[in-house]
Amino acid sequence: MPRSTVQPAVDSEPRAEAARGYELVVIGGSAGGIEVLNVLLGALPADFAPAVLIVTHLPPDPPSYLVDAFAHRCALPVLEPDAGERIMPGRVHIAPPGYHMLVEVDRTVALSTDAAVRFSRPSIDVLFESAAPVYGERLLALLLSGANDDGAQGLKRVRAFGGTAWVQAPDTAASPEMPRAAIERGVADFIYTPETMARRLAALPASF
Image (cartoon, rainbow, N blue to C red; front, side, top):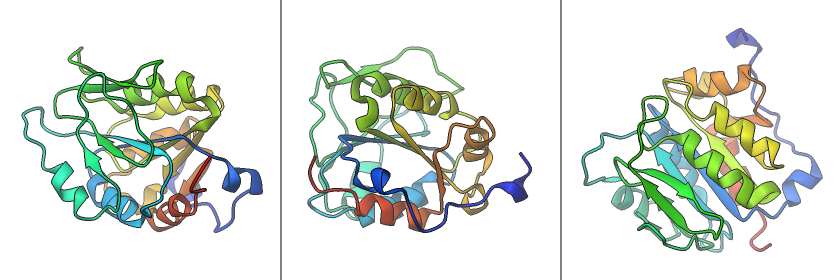
């Protein structure tokens, strides 16, 4: 799809989408995604109801600075989950460096050192694909700036199970390849600027 044809969604949204009670928000990003995450997490109110799981492409060697960095900006608790940890509403879970982060059927976190997917561990596709059948239409997936096509296949699965896909507008991304790949494959429900995405997240219902 030519870049000039990719346009952010207008500042309106179908009523059913705006009122939907999501239980889990999964977010994936790579190069340029940290800056957008700072905007998104900084916008979340203290009574934000869904759980949030985040995968970013980082060097595999711990420690990660992201928990401390995001905790200073976010009104919600921010943590790196342990394997088997329950996914709790109103908490932000960051994938540890060097581990795939998955959602189990009992709504706990699994961590895996299986081979890299799309050259990455953690992989966005792995998170999105595992969360899709567990949360179904109560799942919201966000794909941000990045330099490969990780996440596009995962968004396809999210939508197949009734979930919703938001994709960052490529012309606002430091690395537009990742969101553009999702758009070209037809797996974006909405294409948003980071500012609109943050506003939409903050406006989600405080309970479900």
